[in-house]
Length: 349
Image 1 (tube, rainbow, N blue to C red):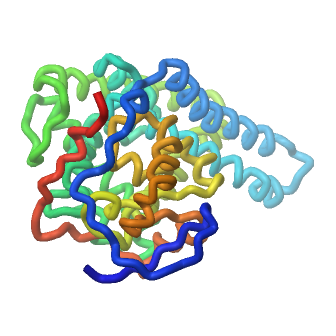
Image 2 (cartoon, rainbow, N blue to C red; image 1 turned 180 degrees about the vertical axis):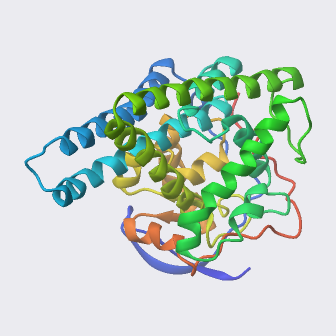
Image 3 (cartoon, rainbow, N blue to C red; image 1 turned 90 degrees about the horizontal axis):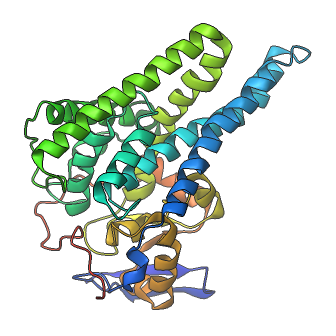
């Protein structure tokens, strides 16, 4: 086993070289960390809506200040347009949580809640994404990881920023279409619903997206500036900025428990992702709700698991974004699949 260097700035321990411990399975968590919360789910949705609609409205107000030169308005608007687009990404992450069945005790309520929320992003089939994503969780950075087939082909920041999400969304849309027609997917792991229920969810996804699209068209026809600032530009932000997220989470890593993804603990990422930035913890315990991921992080950190496994815990903003450059390749799928199945969470009774 090769020696690896680890640092734990949060605990004040100086860097040292230690052999990384390989974990066959993650440590067992208390059962209460798996419990969903309706109030927290509502808060999560409102958080995303506040970003998307609230910051979009601020950008629109800035644009309406005719006393300012156009260039000044554009500069002042830019951060609010970015945050509005990030709000769309947050709403997409609500869909991600919904299909992890962590928004509500009833799995159908959880999935439908996520579906209605994430469909705000036109061109994003959250049902097709979920089908792929369950396989990504089961086979992270391994031979059967579908994400590796998409994201490993992009080797530098520019291609990742411009094309990675478009490529992935096209694949998810195709999966969503196949599911809506009752067709099987070329994936080993199926969603935790009957085939008929999955077909209904996929068709519902398309119908809800059509409703959102109709509203966006009406809004743009009613007020062109509002449509561009509050709909078109946020969509551009979410398509390109979210294309970097897989590299923030997985670039430069390998397969295995505590080794296959990265958490970003700086408050900036918690602000942007509402705890979904604790991605290593999420991969270890996929059904733990988003609001408990910081508790999972503290449990693993305080018990020394990150240090023993040399886990990727990124505490700085630049350190995280540096992983989007070509210096950090996306794992190109290993030669075999590991036996451990993270979708069968280990928890105490």
